[in-house]
Length: 334
Image 1 (tube, rainbow, N blue to C red):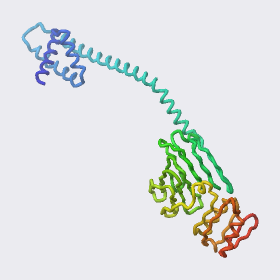
Image 2 (image 1 turned 120 degrees about the horizontal axis):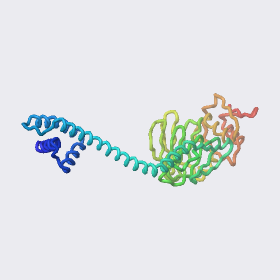
Image 3 (image 1 turned 60 degrees about the vertical axis):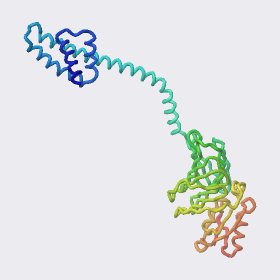
């Protein structure tokens, strides 16, 4: 390093004396342009060079002229450096402009796509009480809604996601898409599916959520207990208690076709206060339950296509646990 510094000092001395040649001048310029530290080094060294030259016993050295020449050189180097920087900036700007021109259509596309997805309207389908509705989603998946149920999904469904919101009960026959698994979102559980046949029931007034898997793969996020990716096997039903988040698995007692029809009313030791809302939405009637019989439990299986509401209530009354009547368009169970 000492030898190198001495070499630079010699170059400065030769320049001050006017003896530097073109190659040496380029070397000195390169040294100054490398960084600010080198530039400061040259500026400080020239003071020493001038001092040395001024104290030598000769009269041929014009200190003032040499100093002016050296200052002019340093200014010229700085000017050249700035010009080089401006040229680099202009070149970079040209390259950036070219990249921008090529990239702008892509940015515009994705920006437009992002804005478009934000502007997508929500599409809703509802099955009124006493009826069922089947709908085909944009990806070809099929959803059958039971009475009093609603699904909603974005107009852009299937583009970057397959999210669908459900209130009530629906049977899903999902088209396989490993890249975009379908997500069925309810208030209490979220279902993740790739290609499956399943049924989920989560009415607002129900105390339990029921998820039945007939074919394929399905994982369930229990939002109540904050447990995620709970696996469900074909032929199994997952029942989640809405109050505690506790879940249990049981074997399905119906075929896929029976599950898809959603015509079977199966009450397995359920209290009357849970049975009444099911009957009300299934037959589009109003039912009031007296407090004295709300906890009466029933084991019943009916088919909505075969039995009507009066036949079902008559059979329930024959058990001796309840009575019923009809007045002012409302059924009263007591």
